[in-house]
Image 1: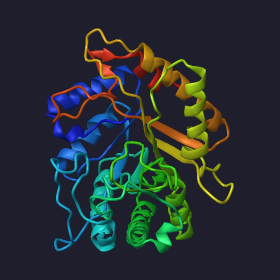
Image 2: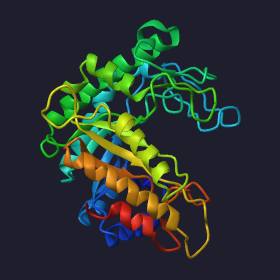
Image 3: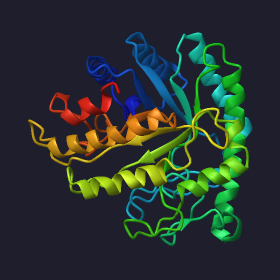
Image 4: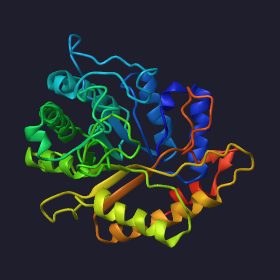
Length: 347
């Protein structure tokens, strides 16, 4: 289960969250933490309740690295930050070492460690210029298109940071066997127009993973991170369900391979979910429950094939900085919704 920005919440609210998660028998949450006392204390309180962290870490950048400013009025949901090509492996290694040393010293074992988030599109990777062309780049574009070639430079630099993360992980006393997961990638179709007809650009999921594999990804990670948010239309309709299943199997899972099979790695769905914008209490969650049940059937198929190593719902509740209920959240009105119960239930 994803827990969005838990360190933004007060300690009292963090403890309430932990109690909710424990009551629902959640055993892994995906989030980032800082390496200071605040972050380690939160991790210790989770760990004491039998809950591990699937940890998101980010590259470090030098103070003089170029930066894309955050302009929410002009480009909503497009975050600012540094282009991936300016990531600093040396600074990143030092930060990772500090964090893993703190985890080791406090006896905190991780469920997984994931470097970066959605690096194959403009929102989270400032390597992409704004505005873009509304294009989803192919593998060929990463070698031939001017913008694609710059994005490829960022991907190559990303792998250098994964290399130092793996070195730190391999020398950890407690977490040396913690799985390394690639950044969760948007399950975009190579060469397709964006579904929302906006101008932000992406690189297709297949193209991204193929390029990264060609440059050494499989020697560095234990699983590929994938994000998938299927269309929620017509829940319970067999035709709509078949379309969602086809996209999941042919796009989201296309590059996923059983462990040890060669030519790829298993996938970990680090974000998935369906919206429910209703804010009423009691919550009406019947339609979303049908969609989650459908998705679990798809998961069952690929888990049996050993192509899927894990799946993490997004999200438990809203961001502590947000005053509104996040549409994807499943803890509402003081309890876990029916869709949420299914999302965290054992397979």
